[in-house]
Length: 208
Image (cartoon, rainbow, N blue to C red):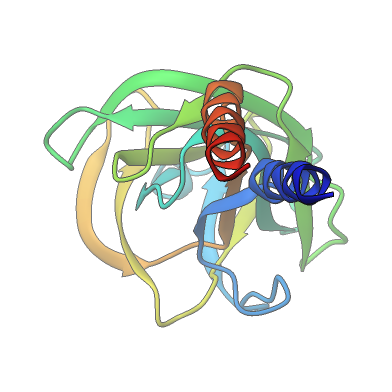
């Protein structure tokens, strides 16, 4: 009976550990965001001073493969281009520049004109983050006539930024900015789950 209880405990611990964990979030509670303002994400067909893509920096608070990326994005009602890309980069070691490209995710901005919408992108790739490491999430318009807004998240959260006015070719570093609405969740690595199971089973065997 005691061994059965321990086995159930092991299964419960594994299930809890396997649940997605938040590696970073700048949303208000309940996926809330600022509905009034954000950063322009505009294509190369915009007037030169309005061409912009934006990368926000964050430190991962959990490790594992990326599971879901959530962003709040608005559409300005200008042009017809609704295709957007998110790019996850490692930091270059300076906390001021992009390192290796880890993953990309494309989605269609279906937000009503002049309003924002929550988008949740399920990861189909192999991008992973490591707790305590620094990363950049870059949002770029894929269409030249795309005019989008990456809405602000919790205004109490500040983050560094890399801002491009040439379609992501070059970037300017900005140290303190309102964090755009972004959440990254991860799932634990299978190896970590196996180690946990082995440890719990050893503990059960010692107590028998």
